[in-house]
Length: 400
Image (cartoon, rainbow, N blue to C red; front, top):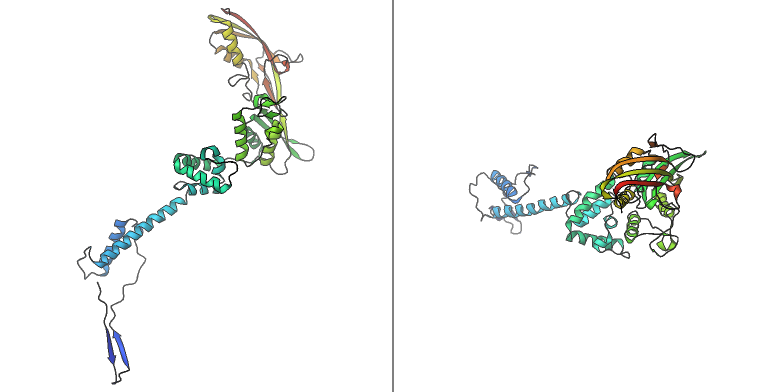
């Protein structure tokens, strides 16, 4: 280690008050060049680089020991740079969604791409309440992610997907796809019409349970003249509007399906664009079906299976939303689903037509043509012949 230089006091011309201090300073250190090895990021590599640099600057010294003050200083500097390097890596990692580890960083990065995790995540999961302000919800969500990191990973994956999803209704396909996102809409179709002064958009929907747009809904089964919704449906619809920052009308007001859809439609449609909301055009189908049953099956069982297959339940052929707008109805499709049932040996459809005397029987042609907003329906309910019906004749099988 270099010794501290000693100062000498020199008096000239015999003057006791004219002394001058003279010091022999050591040679200046070599200039610092920017030749630091930036690949040295950990303690060992930084210490090795500094020791090599120290040895190169003082070649006359051939022995360095851990007790030397220069070596101690080098190790202290290497330790500090190692921690600074780690801090730099952590800071850079928190700046990217792929590598961020802190819940607060992940939430903020998701917010930059339009994904509000406090809204997209059900409040019941992380303890959020309706009266909580945004800061309280954020803190609760971050604590929830600390406890359950896999939930944060799910949000990390779902967030970027939102960037590639069109949330506005611009094209006709956008109108159809976004309307089908609504829990009450099973199928939607959009078309444009020239009204004489401007082009209007006409959106046609098939709704839950084939209900018309002007059907009133409620969350209370005891309310007359209204279709009751289950608690799960009410929660799903409420979450749908909450995620999009919309406020639906209260259920006590018995809102119609049209009123609920209008709030959503007006929030996402193009500004200045006139949009009509209409029901699909149901086309009732009339059929006469003869079925021969295998000898080991009861007729009542096969009849029940046929009713489910041709019914409007979740797996039925005429389930709401299953058939597309303007989709032709083929007789062969009816025969195929019936022949797939256990106990059915043969099927013959003797009448296959639209409801109404003005429409001919199409059993010989095997297809009923539909177009535009028409959708084939066959509810087979008493007193509602206009919505389709079928007559079933069973032969063979076991009685009962």
